[in-house]
Image 1: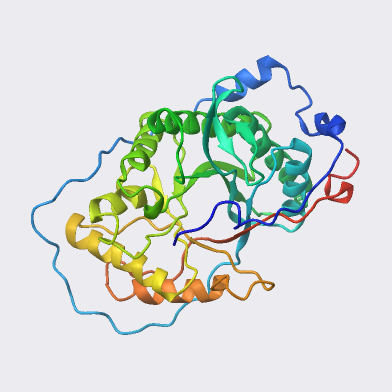
Image 2: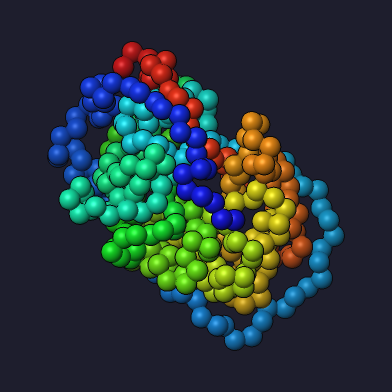
Length: 359
């Protein structure tokens, strides 16, 4: 589904004193601590993989199984289109999520890739149209993780996977391969920070809103994923995008498959805003079974539902039911329940009341 960049988020102004931003940084924010966080030993690197080529033969196709009971989907977590990288604001957002015992996948989408050599090099343009370097964006995610960890009620078993998000829209950078490697490096730095400060209820990941209509040739999207994979970090890259009409309309099967699990670190969290999108993603998974012998790797789903927006599509429960029913049409793609569901929107304004108490 084709989306316009700066109309999909509400431009509510949030004004907080920048002089208190230091309150959200770690207690010992010296260079040695940052260096230590970036060099925490990661889990063994995931194996490499290349863009899949044609595989001879076809998997046997069996009869469509009978309809089965659909298990209710997981409670949706709130993902955000970010307008700012203010550590104070991101920490307050995280604190709000912690107090709500949020669990599952949380994507913080900082906008499209950007490159300003005199202001930090590779980075993004946020949904307020402002440039933010990769380092600045990563610190914003760390602030969210700190707020979540400090405000999560003691004894809670809730955990989130916190994804550093961007998109393949208008990728105006010198090299999307380099951008992918750097995105992986920042994801690893976030993971190191979490380990250093024992924020055990938060797990780092990366994300990309991948939409075929934004890169019809596929080349620049492929290079970003390839660069991420070649960084050899043990972190996943969640594709929370669309198929824009389905396999073969813009991208071929091998291209859509690559960013939905063909690349070793890629996982699909498909946008399911209506029934057609559920059909398209389920058909991609069935075609992957026939061509490559395995379905795509679906880690959850994303919606954009709002009670104040009548045209924003399915609720999380409706999306889950639609996708699970479509996946049930082939025995090798059938699942009882998806692992996660997240609903993305613009963040509500935060206030001092959202900050950790006594901090």
